[in-house]
Length: 312
Ligand code: PEP
Ligand code: MG
Image (cartoon, rainbow, N blue to C red):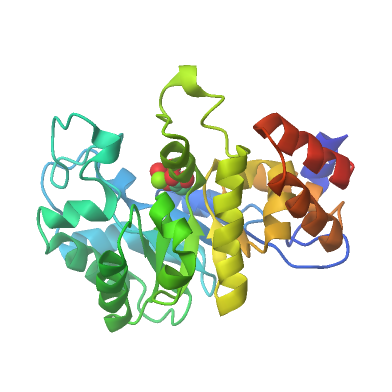
């Protein structure tokens, strides 16, 4: 059964005919990083730093922050670790970084936008990441959440590169996917946050259980934006990963590889099932599935098309 295959699958991520698919872990602290290091994860694709600070009343110093980040790097020596800068606001209130009582918090001051409240916070955080990652040249990537303008992408990229880090942004706002080439020419990499990209593309609150049919990454409008973003990556030769829930769906993982997505990041417990599914299909099948879902009229049709092509 698929479950047994997932358990016995060893990694690294690749299709049946040997095309590599980097499988990474989503983590939120040193303990999670150590657990992930014991799985088949090849590195960390999303370190959600804001979750380290939900209980903090004031901004921790640069040294204090570095002490929090360091164990994550230590769990993955010589491996890629992608650190997301503070994604405060909306569903993740951080007392020292977010605006309380917004009427529409998901559309409010969240992610990179909170640096408008105190422009020093983000440089402090990036300093702390660089300090904690000392000696890990090229393997420490940082990315900003909720970027929506070219000016934000430039500001963040300059700041991260000045500190010797690989600089990227998350693709969570449709404006970025629509202008994918323009944004990607500025940064070193993209990571698509399909949870928020779906929420904003479908105009449906990801926290609202009544909207589950809308907040489905198989929605053809969402798939089209992901495909467009992946295509920019192929054209410019830069990495484009996925780090939302979509990456943990074994069938969708094959479609994403077929679109040209270069890495998939998920809870480490999901890696076995995704790796096992990828090992059963060829790269050409994945590309055929990616083609097939683009013409689908609904999320269910897209799923059915992918199943048909992948024999899953
Ligand atoms: C996403 O939006 O898909 C994502 C990975 O970020 P988060 O779920 O933390 O908002
Ligand atoms: Mg997000």
